[in-house]
Amino acid sequence: MKNHSHDLIHQLSEMMDSVWRIDRHYLGDAKTCGDECVKIWENLRNDLQKQCEILQKSIKKHCAEDKLL
Image 1 (cartoon, rainbow, N blue to C red):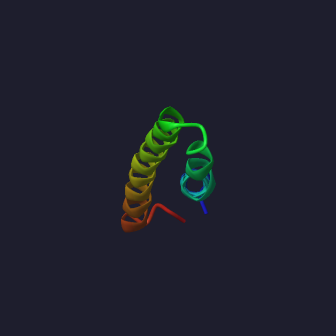
Image 2 (image 1 turned 90 degrees about the horizontal axis):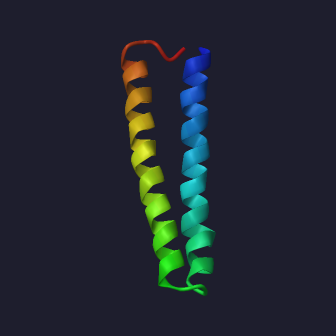
C-alpha cells in the first residue's frame, strides 16, 4: 500500500475512533458539567464527522482510480 493511502486510512480510523469515544463517553460525562460542555463535545463530534466524510470521499476516489494500493 502506498504511504499516502495508508495515511488517509489511518487518519480516518483515528478520527472515527474519536467520534465513537465522544458518543460513548465524553458526551455522557459532559452532561454532569452542563450545557456548555455538552455543546463543545457536540461541535467537536460534528466537525470530526465532516472531516471523516472528506477522507472517505478521497479514499473512494483513490480506489476508483486504482491509486490506493
